[in-house]
Length: 182
View 1 (tube, rainbow, N blue to C red):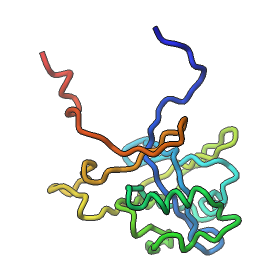
View 2 (cartoon, one colour):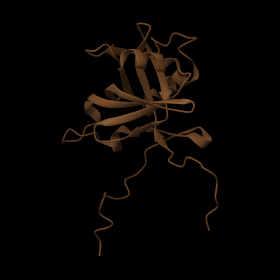
View 3 (cartoon, rainbow, N blue to C red):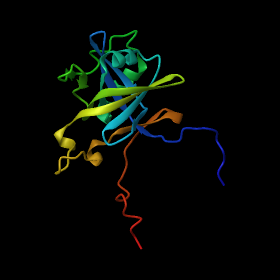
View 4 (cartoon, helix red, strand yellow):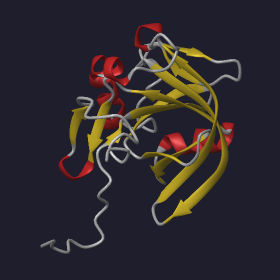
């Protein structure tokens, strides 16, 4: 028997990312555990309204989504512990600016460069609907077909109710294989 537990968001864990944008002509980084896929070329990044980073995203209309792996987790966690409004986080990571001036973390194994299409506002949050312009991936995590191999990448996941970090696990099957069995 199932127990009713309220309107609990039960879609965790989520991939952990660091979002980068320019704020007042300086790179700023924020740790984000609320990202989502809304199409094959669109993602959503949801941030609490008071985040300093939101100002830069709205001003530039651009952001980078830097996927966190275990090696970069200590700095990524730090990006979530301090506010850019009170501390200059521009030198927290080694970075490069893309052609449009958006900062991308050098240590991130995968980086998506995005343009904001729309902002969906709810109570306390601004959700940035973004078009993925380009994706960059370290060669070491690509398979022989040039696709990201998530068994190699080992993305860090965030689980909100316990505030714990997890990592991706073992392969348990191929998509659409179980339903084809007689």
